[in-house]
Image 1 (tube, one colour):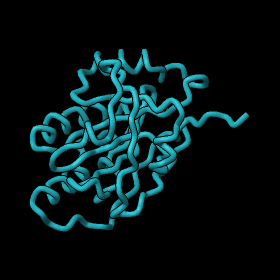
Image 2: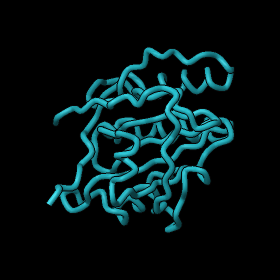
Image 3: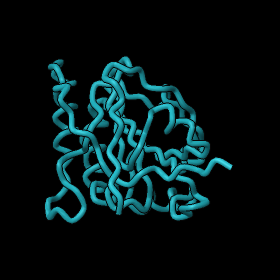
Amino acid sequence: MAVTPSTMMPLGTRAPDFELLNVCNGQPLSLEDGAGAAGTLVIFICNHCPFVRHIEDALIEFAWDYQPRGINVIAISANDVDSHPQDSPELMQDRASAKGYPFPYLYDETQAVARAYDAACTPDLYLFDAQLKCVYRGQFDDTRPGSKQAATGADLRHACDALFAGDPIDPDQKPSSGCNIKWKSKA
């Protein structure tokens, strides 16, 4: 499996707006409607990626811990479903239901949102403050599939805790890495 690093959006960048289908309820969701009072985590994931599956339970736990405190999580899948049918909206809905996602799971059919965020891999995550300015873009934590370490989200949690405390978030952030986003072929 080829490992792709994230491209590391510049800190301070405003979150690109979007409105995408939430496969969990069949309704569109915009960034504005999904944003949290204290911050917003936008994370690009998919159903099949072993890197996503490695952190999935810890990501769900992170959402349960931080959403009540005002940091909302918005997950987006942008993979080409023609080449990767396991990432179809129907199967996204099945996965979200089976795992009990406490956050919306959006489908970026045109891949325009993934391109606007310059997303490169799954998982690729972006933490924005209450003004939707990027304050963290990096790895969930140091674990990887096969590492014998359980995912904890330590790096992301540290950034969120600093955001809550009004402390500076260390700008020296390690890129996320995972499977590359499955881009549609340009015909």
